[in-house]
Length: 487
Image (cartoon, rainbow, N blue to C red; front, side, top):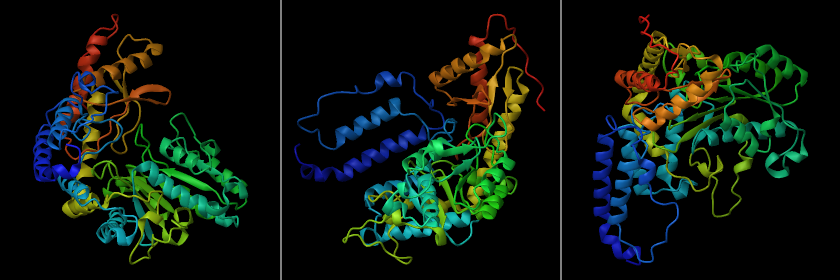
């Protein structure tokens, strides 16, 4: 079958087959292993011959479905606690299918009035969801890295403008280097964005008060004061990836206002703390920022890929994103061209999934989900505290529990290697996914709870599986220990 036109009659059959297999996959998410055993061996070879003659539409879809059932990581399931990944709500999944069907390019208003209007509405709904002031506007992105990129690009251009330079037109060589300050909690995506923007990740001063990365607020005040009002960027972090800890955003906002710095808040998942009354104070001050970045495929539970950046419109120069093409109208506030607000020109209609899930569940639905995950995190922390061979390493302010295996009789210098091996065994086992990290110099686990499907039994299974695997690895000198009484 040499020409797609020859299989035009298969469109409906292809969609029906995909829907049937997708429904079967989703139906298994609650019970399937997160990583099927032997999945690497079942993958197709990395190199093979390109087919000369095609098979038509249905055979490749059936083969993809077979591969998906056999090898796909169930990252949208309830026991995937790695990388702070959410799932996909029913409304978001259905809308994302429609986004592929409608296949809109949301670069300019004429290319997709539907996509542009829904993105316009969605961004305002997100602003309202997080209680940010009405002067915030923004753009949907591929994820947290590009959301940080957009916010930090706005900060870069603002700093350049304060020096009488256009960073987009003249480049950074025409101005002094931009100082950037943060705590030790700054995420790799923000550093990557600063590198891409030419500001330089090595130009970031991490003002950490201790080995956990906690901000030295006095040092930040001194560093900003020493600039004498010269423009700079301060990155505040809402939710550190190993423990869920927060920078003191409100205090940082106060210093940024006093010393004339651009405040960017990286709220990849921590921005959602603002939804629940008991956690809202953690992210207090985000409303005072110049720019805020967050992920959609984390706690919003929409499909990959999705992120969003919200920037105070009065301070936002979009010079860097000007298309400078006569056939691409940049638009205005009524008919926006979102390709001129971020780095992408060809843009998938991500707004459809975000709009649908916000329309389906509203503020109260998302508040309920966040509060349920806060409860589950405390349940997990209590389970860890009750087990004598598990040691919790940090407080649990939000949805991440940081702990390690500490078997009785093990030498201190053995613990890092033991936890690395246990982490490898957990991922190989596949029933539950939670990776290792290094926190305060110690190898540890850092499961994150952000999937709408996750229940108490999923959290309990993580501890049960870890202890089961640990029993087979326990040092020969270590006797078995009884669980502590639950607090």
